[in-house]
Length: 139
Image (cartoon, rainbow, N blue to C red):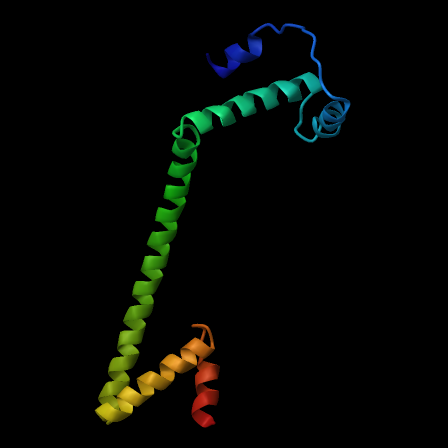
């Protein structure tokens, strides 16, 4: 049944036994959901709750809708992040090659420096800035 068919479907009046507190909740909330009436709000709530119950019985109800959307968002983010990491790696490789070509650094100094840099990066939770490195080098 299409959405327009559902809107054209005739409505039926029936007795509904409901707690006063629940009816007060409907009264407070139905306009916030842009419902024209409390009946519309209750009908939407029943349809929503039926879907929720179906989701608990059939694990494919929500996951198909939500997981495809989340997967798409994650894939797009992954592509952007991977691209940025690649660009940073190229810039870092260039910097390292320039430094290696212009400085005479022995293996022992390099090993000690790596250890100290690991400590320093951990100390700054991976967010070491140039300013931090400058202060560290200048004492």
